[in-house]
Image (cartoon, rainbow, N blue to C red; front, side):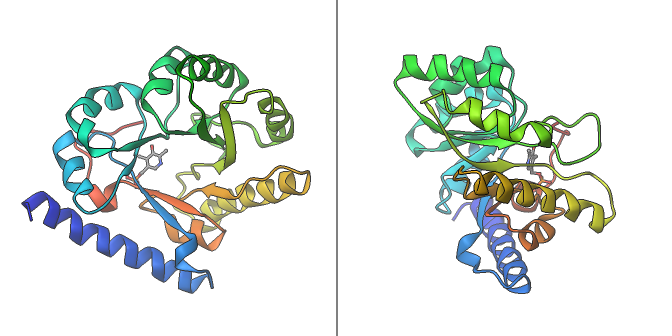
Length: 235
Ligand SMILES: *Cc1c(COP(=O)(O)O)cnc(C)c1O
């Protein structure tokens, strides 16, 4: 086992254990909560080591990074998951390289993705990113627009809408953080009662995932706790 693989194996086992423990605390089945490793800012070599642990889905927040890393990992059958803000002019690369988009937050982007995916002859899973925190800098659809947005997405055959995603407020108050996760679940329940099938809730990161699991997360997106501290901040 390489040094990188041993390092990651320890972190991965620890994270899985903490996720399982959070599930037990919440009275939930650990099998119902997946972990998306977030590899942003880390290089192809470390990702290859993670592949050695049996991981094959990785979250990234910049299309350019996926472009840069994927050639060196072409033999690994990696599924790249886009979790960061997406500019419409990146739709072509997304259609070619990405297996899932969790940051869909506007129809203009859906339209661009649909056009490019049609050309590629592919369909992908998408999650709608909803803004649940009061910070002005956060991307995401305003909650009150969700019903109309979902109705609009029905026109796009290449986008399979599977659920919702959010980032919680950066507050140090767990009540406020948990409130963001609760809002996402309530929104999901509300649109589900209107006939949309949205089983997936992607919420929770290294610093707040137990709260997200308590509110019904079906997957948590974990970077730091698996790969370590990032050398530079990725917005
Ligand atoms: C970076 C990032 C994460 C992971 O954050 P950590 O705190 O390192 O676990 C999760 N979701 C999104 C959207 C991110 O950009």
